[in-house]
Length: 245
Image (cartoon, rainbow, N blue to C red; front, top):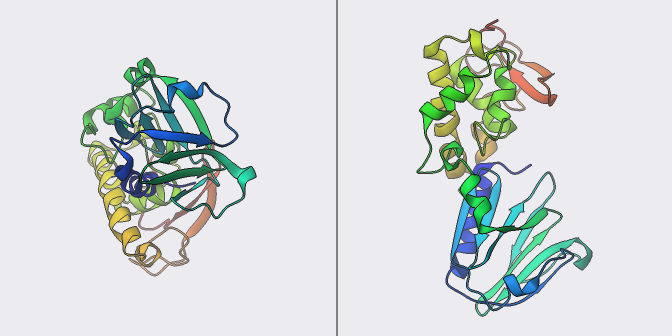
């Protein structure tokens, strides 16, 4: 599943269409085309792993899910996988094997934009308050909760916890304030590092825990375990990452 930084890269590719009118659309998504065709793309907003293409009367919400993808200008993937394609005067935006919903603009007012770890609106205090309301939640689940850390995926989860020195199965309510502050900071900071390294095509070179076998700090073997309610894989050092709770 693409994480927040990958969606930022997708937005960068889409930015050239802002201010342009949609000439035509295609794809398997069924909706009222009059809401989009012949309307200008006014703005693109991100919320974690979700992309919102905002028009005068409606917004298109795109979520790439686990296996979604996109192309710009030239279609090289099968038509059957094309969920929605938008043709502008200066090119095409094509989205495959993903979730697409047409939303009324009022729905955008219901989104807590401050939960997006890569947004200028990010608010760490709000994240901390949400965590306090869920003391029994495991921190591995909390970091993957898009209502708290929108944009964080399994890579960022693993790396943030390693950098903060906290084991993934620690209970939120048992983690000391200093360590919790470190987790929140690392979740945001690593997201921007992720973006920087992804742009240079060197992301995996910087992994310290994710898909690694030994701890870069102590040299001990890293644990690999399915953790939390979602059973996503965690990689952690039993020596350098403390279990709370």
